[in-house]
Image (cartoon, rainbow, N blue to C red; front, top):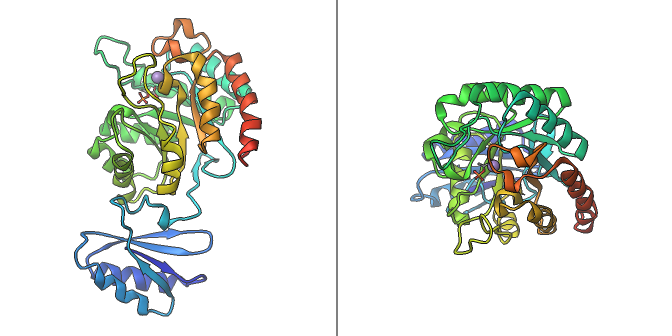
Length: 338
Ligand code: PEP
Ligand code: MN
């Protein structure tokens, strides 16, 4: 159930609602929108009719059920959409956000060169994996804590907030200190204990879709983070497994407008993992913007031919710069800015 309060309610009135909701054994999440404050009440669904009595309060506009299984992620609780601030960069507003950088941090020289390249090309955030989730335990696993420090340093030098993947809840403190946004990769998209732990931080989380996660399941994964109190979640469509083997994954662009209908959370697209082929990255990036994405995640490597992971899908710096240039008129055509 959500309790929609009338415009200009006082803090005391919000407090009254929160207390009454708690007395009915529901958890209250206060969601402050531009015009209105909404109190989302989550808990077991029996006894919901008791919440309806809150409508009798003079400062309550209405009490309405959220019919979908995800509650805090539902569009109804924040109709205008969420804007997530990542180290000063906003994801979810009119302006598109571009996250770019190598698949993995491989050396100081490589990450510094990548940082210069993506900054010059027009990225707003720098990415790079330090702890890598590899299919094979014998493959390069990332530079770990050292890689995280190199990424942080490169980001600071060029003035870009950094995004990097976390796999193990034991590393949360390290990541909270050294990264601006924590990525949950496709392989951990339904690692509920990791999601819960991340929900107890207030760091922005970039939640990727699992390779065979349905959209409802994807939003339930986001709900795990939101329900622990962290509202800073950005969703990332990165392709799903299908029968098609010509591309690494099948980029599901249907997901973009559908997620935008269902949820207030920003939605970005990763055409690098979505296709696995560098020449398909730019066209699918443009298509993502046309479909309504709030941003892009693009893998860029100073020299993809020697990359230690995901070489075939990483863009050379000049191709990344061309992509950003080409994206501007597409963004403008759908009423967005870059
Ligand atoms: C990555 O971003 O480098 C990555 C491993 O992505 P995914 O989890 O989408 O495969
Ligand atoms: Mn990668």
